[in-house]
Each structure stands twice: as C-alpha cells, then as structure tokens.
Image 1 (cartoon, rainbow, N blue to C red):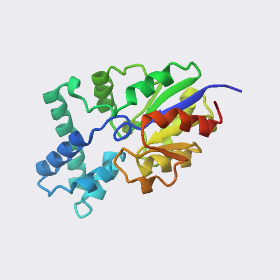
Image 2: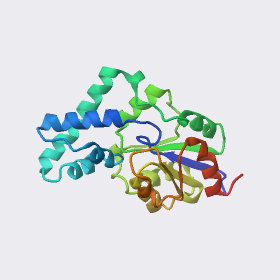
Image 3: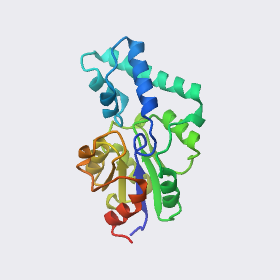
Length: 225
C-alpha cells in the first residue's frame, strides 16, 4: 500500500485573492457585450465555476449567443489586464499560503495538485507570476474538464498520481469545491477567507480560518501526528 498522499488546492479564493482582477474582467466583459454587469456578490458567487457555466447564471435572460460572447470577452479582458499589469502583479497569495506550500512540498510522501476553474493559460500566468512552476505534480484546469462540482478534475488528479481518494484531500473556498470532493470520494477542507460564506462549506470535513491551521486539519483527516 502506497504511503503517498495528495493535497489538491483550488486557486482563486484559496491560494490567491484574485477578486479585484475577476471583478474588473467580468465588468469589462459585460460592458463589451452591452449588458449590465451583475453586482459584486453575484460575481464572486460563481468563482470556481467554468465560464460556460458561470455566464448563464450571471445573465439568465441572455441567449446562448450572448453567453458565448461573454465568455470570450471575459478571457480577452482578463488577459488584457494581465498584459497591462505584468505577471509580477499577479493576484496576491493569501497570508501563509507560500509557507504552507513550502512545508507540504518538503515532505517526500506528500504530492501537491491544483484543481481550478482557470484556463491553462490563466494558471500558467499565475504560476509564473509567483514563481510556483513545478510545485504541483498535477494541474487540472477548466479547458479539459466539466465545470466544478463535477468530480472529473479530482478523478484525473488521482489517476495521474496513483493516490487513493481517502489518502487525498481537496482544499477550497466554495461549495463547488466541497461538492466536487464529495463526488470524488475525497475528504475536503474548507477555507473561510475565500468567496463563499462559511455556511456554504457545510460538506467540508473541517473548515480552517488560516493556513496556520492546515497541517492540524490534515493530521485530523488522515489520522497522522
């Protein structure tokens, strides 16, 4: 039986505070298409979903053509913002995130992964901006999977690493992350500092309030010291 363990992180709202970029890009996309942008709470409420699922939720009265336009306008606006600001101005890591990643990466039996609603291009820009290239052995992005909470991303991460579901854990800030983990048969840790209210994390095995609490939560889930 393998001793390997897998820790899979969501990105937006979990590792990085990207709400400023997301809000600006979403408002720009709606402006480009000529539609009124949703309010801040509505936009942050869909963070984690793939864009093709998020846009109909944000603009339910628009038709499929408008939704497709919104998706492309968001991508273009987001990348335009990245080009203007440069990768060095990537959304900031939350306090303690880098130290937590460093500590886990230093344990030979622990593998790190990502499961994000970002595109491959978007994730690459963020990893470059924070010097995190090569830190994650499995990187699952929206380009190749159904939107969260479908378990496809986590199933692929488990298959790529050969880790059993009970030896893995999903860490995220939204109900979609918790539902995805449950569907994949994995434990889940919710983080309270992200974009969904704490009560939306009801399916989490445990909810933490800072990265300082992460190792204790992992020990509790896996029964390790």
